Length: 177
Ligand code: 5GP
Image 1 (spheres, rainbow, N blue to C red):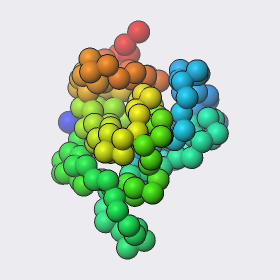
Image 2 (tube, protein in one colour):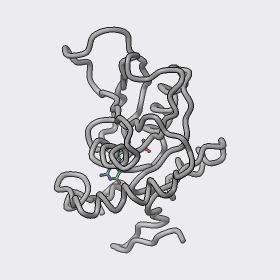
Image 3 (cartoon, rainbow, N blue to C red):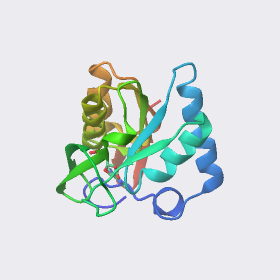
Image 4 (cartoon, helix red, strand yellow):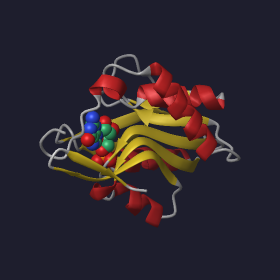
């Protein structure tokens, strides 16, 4: 645990990646969304990419990631959304090329963490701009006490997190059951 309610998972999920565990997490995500047609998995760079790729591989569909910074490699029209970053305390304009999201797409949005829900809300806005459908959202870890997941569930989205941390206090972590 780091100050400010940040959970450090660099040893297995954010910087060093436990690939065997990642495969198991992707399988579980596939099980949670079984029976729902998904044509694309969407996330935001950089820390969302590993999980999104593993889930997309499990489902046999492409993975698309939103960029956080303007890039010289990108051409053509983009969808844009502002996202306030919980960890960096700054607002990014995320973007996805219009080429990669179409009206007929059914999109599963994934991320490493779900905290206040700003990253997912930005990605939902991008799917909406494309006129595509949000099938649901899946995070590796949700910090339930920050409320973003429950807010999105309240709006009718299917939000599944592989672990929900309810409380982080005095060096102890409590999970939602
Ligand atoms: P939200 O937008 O839901 O507030 O926060 C989600 C984003 O912030 C994720 O993309 C993730 O990269 C980052 N994040 C939020 N909380 C944590 C945390 O406790 N630990 C780490 N490593 N990243 C976090």
